[in-house]
Structures are given as structure tokens and as C-alpha cells.
Length: 406
Image (tube, rainbow, N blue to C red; front, side, top):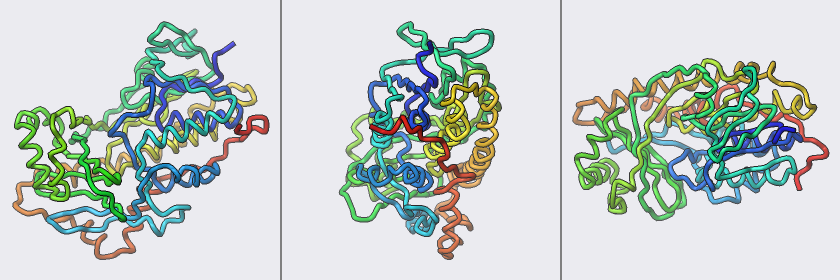
């Protein structure tokens, strides 16, 4: 007998949401997570209206919003000392017109707690997957670092942008390139009534300030491969640069006492050209690594999980084979991935790379940003693309009568 019907590798947004939905449908589901908890900083923390809608469809939204979070109904950028509004989420046709700024560990802990209410769900932590088990070209399970082989009818690869499983499966990867990397760090702040999340642009440099209540989560954008050069100039110079670029954080920038407080995110933008092989399907970052632009990665991963359950869960619950349906998941999700990655590439080249290469003495906002700021009605367009996405999913996967939450 298999260890599970569905074996999910990776306890991130795609993996945990898929685990909840398949367990809810009565599919014996085992999620393997290599870490012992979800407490890893500098992950995506923006829960967009499309994801809030999904939680509402599950009847979980009000409980979710009891978790610590801040609400960002608008997004602005600071250019040349002036603030420009670029996206307004308050007018979306969504149950909540804001982005919920919630630490990802809170989000994942919430989904895990809800999934555990179903008897067919198991989360096994401190379990690192190292490879695939196969028989006659069919994936039959996974191997783990402690020497186990776990078997399942289907393996779902949700193990992130450095996916061990997609490499082991030989799935072909298209690298779209990215001209930037990001230094992530946090700076303490006083909590304010309004969420102050913004981006700051100056000639040759930029930083994103994500208001997390009692601290700023900061993303300092640098040219691809320039991290060592920045470090060589020393931490005091780095602090001075950030303080000059974003005076909002200047008084507390001394909280950065070593380079250990500054984490490098090597930005990648890629996607698989085939997401599946018999017995295995990749979704989320394992299928398509997204840029931080727009903070859409977590929400695309959630949409992938919902589409996967919509297409596969009922068949798996009935004990039917699903290899013939794996291509349907890819076909359903490939279009929105291509659209969003295409938009991110435009932002990379026409906004971020251009700004980093700028030698101007003052920052001039692009025409599009000036127009968005002057015509508030137009701010609904980027809000829709960021907040609701392309080809958004709704939950159609079944809820098995014998698998009601406990």
C-alpha cells in the first residue's frame, strides 16, 4: 500500500494550499517539509485580494484575518521626494479591497492548522526529500535524506525555485533572465494607523519599504551580480546609502550591525516548458520562479494549487488514474504565468534596469506613473493585475462528506 495517495514535497504556499484542498476532498495527503517550522524571514508576505477571495470561498477568511496583519489598500512610490499613487485596491470586486501584509509563517501556520482538521492530512516536518523513486519511467514516490522511500499515486513538486524534484525528473527549464538581485533586511519602526508600504526611486538606486507594523521589511535593489562590490564598500557605507535614499528609516538604520542582518535574494525568472511526467507534477515556484515585482509569487502559487485540486482531486478521491490530466493543469496555468512574467520582464528592463543605469542628477518618474497619479481611475488597472491576477481560479474541488473538518 502507498504511504499516501498524494505526496506533496514542500510546505510553502502552493504545497500547503494543495494539501488542504486535497485532504478536504478525501484524498490521503502527505506533505513533506524539510524544515521543522515555517519561521524563515524575507519570504513573500503579501496576501492579495485574489487569495483572500479563495479563503472566503473556503469559509476561512474571518479566522484568517484574526492573525497578525496590516492592510494596504493602496500602493505608492516615492520618486524625487514626491509620492505617486499607482494602484488602488479599494474598488476591486473582491471580498476585501486591500493587500494583507502578513508574515508568511503566519499564513502557512494558519493553512496547516486548517488542513490538520481533516483526517486524511498529514504534515511531516524535518523531512528532506533528496530524489525520486521510479519504476519503468513512472514516478512512484520520493527518497529522503534519512534513507526512506515514500510511495504515492502522485507526487506534487512544490519545493520552490531551487526544486530538487524538477531537476531529478529532468523537466526542461526556460531561463528568462533577470537584471537585478535584492538585499533584504529589516529596520524597526513605530506602528502607525496607516500602512506606509512604498517604493523609493532615485537615480541609480531604489529600495522598497514594506510596512510590517513594528518594522520595515526593506528590499534594496542592485544590479545582478553586484552584491560582492556592495559588501566590499563596507556596512557603514551601506547604512549611509540606505539612510540617504530613504530618510524614513534613517533613525533606525543602526539596527543593521553586521552583514548577517542583510540577506541576498538572487532574483530569477524562469519557467518549466513541461511541468509533468508520469506520476509527478510541478506547481508554484518549482514550475515558475517569479520576480519580486508586484509581490505576486505567493498568489500565483495559490492559484496553481486551486487549479490542480479542481482538475485532479475528484478523480483521485475516486481512485482513478490522473496522469492523463496533468497536462490540463499545465495548460490551465501556463497562460497566466506567461502574462505575468512578460509584465515583470517589461518592468525589469524599462523601469528597474533603466533606473539602476541612470546617471541623471534627479529622478524623473516615468510617464506611466505620472499619468496613474493624476488619474485615480486608472489606478484600478494595476490594482486588478496585481490584486486579482490573470485567469483567477475559484474553488471547485469537492469536499467529501466523510471528511468534514474535525
